[in-house]
Image 1: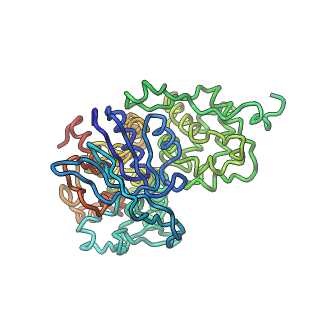
Image 2: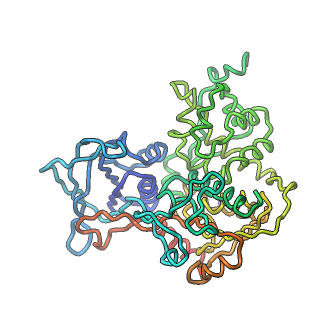
Image 3: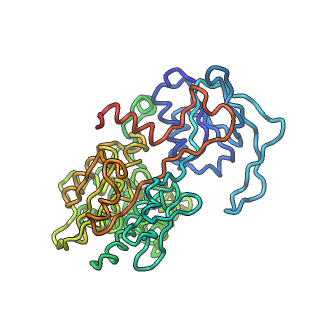
Length: 187
Length: 276
């Protein structure tokens, strides 16, 4: 990273961590791009503020369409966006503005778009069923929350909810433990 | 102070001191200093005990926030630590990295122009300081019941599960493929937000409570899941999410493009600490 022009793609907590790590590794510049506007950026406000203080530049309403370069990275092609109609979750969808592409030069690009479930292949053999998205199916039963489709197996955290906050993973681990205590008859 | 309920009028919200910018950007240490006991008591005393603890409801684990703020204002550190651990297995972690601005502090009644109580910084203070002064979770009433539960993954979900089980007499045995506990707390979140020593300390505390860790073992290859099901009374899975979301555009695989996150940090950690 030392002396490099770094471009970080994404506006979540992982992106903020990448921004500030790149600064500490001595990057010449760090530019963070996000496809919606500042107020819609999901990353923690404290980390956003600290990123800006530490020298990260933000490009909002900018969506990458290509990473350009012949032998290696030379830049990122970004298209300007405007916020359109809300999606199913109520978040407004960024729409590319035709003809607004520009290339931002870069020596290194970090993609920080988040994480998806990665269930191991042996779940199926043990009757642990998944949602189509790959998240683990769990019970919402009052006495045995977070029990999987294999009654002896409970699950919680990101593999059940999808990538989320640390505190929600802690919560689910604790809730699952209460389910396990009931399942074992020691609750 | 004429009326302690009006303390928020005299004492402004004051976050812990941050490392000056020049030093900060060259260091991987945490950037926020710790309150001293007087500073913590003053900031905790800004809570107006509004009677509508929206902070508590907005908190995903429903921490008893106004109650432990009061204990800190009164100087009852160990009681505050005990209470803080009633609802949260990793309060010193959440105090550091939760997005308080959209959880507890965002819901604080004083957040309307007066400056929310610094709930996160006080939460961190309580456990850091109590542990430093020798407080340990009270396990004196726990009766072992002979049950054993395997936990796959030593991240926040697995640690939360182990905490509740061990406090209820069940023996948790936590497996993780890495040689350190914490999962993303250790291999994902950078040390300038959460120093690795914090998680090492938590490991010591949990081992002291009776949690057993079996590290550097990958369930599914080093140990079969069949064996876990046979040897234990139940199994908890807290294995996280590890598939990178792709951009779906050209050039993603060019040299110089990285997908930063858990694996990157894990590689760094292996490079430093070595692994099987």
